[in-house]
Image (cartoon, rainbow, N blue to C red; front, side, top):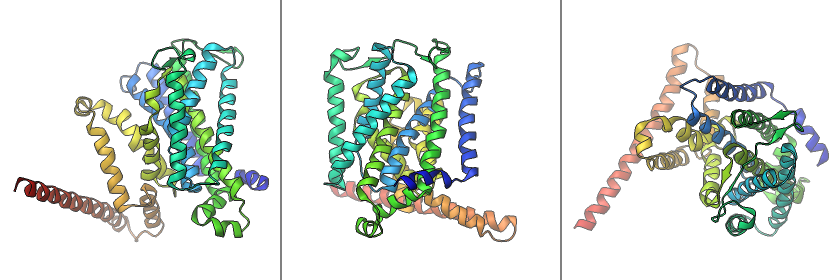
Length: 385
């Protein structure tokens, strides 16, 4: 186990890591241009970027747990909420340094991961998902009822202090706080993205996949199920706690209603839409669920006036992906990569081949919508008759 963990750093793919760093630098440059007064990179866009990065960090933990380990969880929201509440209380009520609070959140995440990991030895599948959902609901009820530790009667908590960094060397104020926190989020985003990618390509990731495909076969090949179940849950809960820590520092307020099962389902949707075979598909899934609304639709008047349309679009995207690409958008990227590696000779034949794939996809989607429309018409006609 220890040898496998050390080997995770040997299975690197330098071009991917360079892309991760460049992506983080792009987000940081957005914030710098926003600070310079750019109209394009306004406050709403930067809030969308911050939300996207935090949600991606949280979903990376579920990617390791579900995508690699095959272990279901609906408790993500409660774990993120616990990280947010713990951060808000420690920063406001104690003099604990900023990064020490982060270490405390990580330690709590490890403890919770171990507890849930041991529970997973007795149950699996939807029963395990229900147990994690129950834990999440326990946390939400604690957020609502432990009002002596919160700032509002409904259980809401806010940050009133601006913490300093590196033992007071960097003192944040109202003007510099949000941009500084976004840079910290971007650094965490790049590091955790690289770590999750590294795990997926390492012996640890392959052992988790073996456990996911067949526990008995994995055991016969020497895979310690207890160790890898514990590790999968620890990674998931630690990433969730880090996400809660970053969320609280970025938004400076949270309440119990934000950590309902809906948030857990949104994180789960990222993994379903993105798929688990490609980190690029995973990032695309995160963009569809969190980035599309916050970064793109928030600028379009129609979607501003009709906010209920956005969840409908996300739902339709999920339906189409599950119908035609069960492996998620990752499957589409893998197929495109195969075509690029085995492309027909000449520029036009290659793009003609790729274009036909997209035409077929939209053709199938259109036929599905027509069939669904006809089905609804038939049902309503029977009712009227």
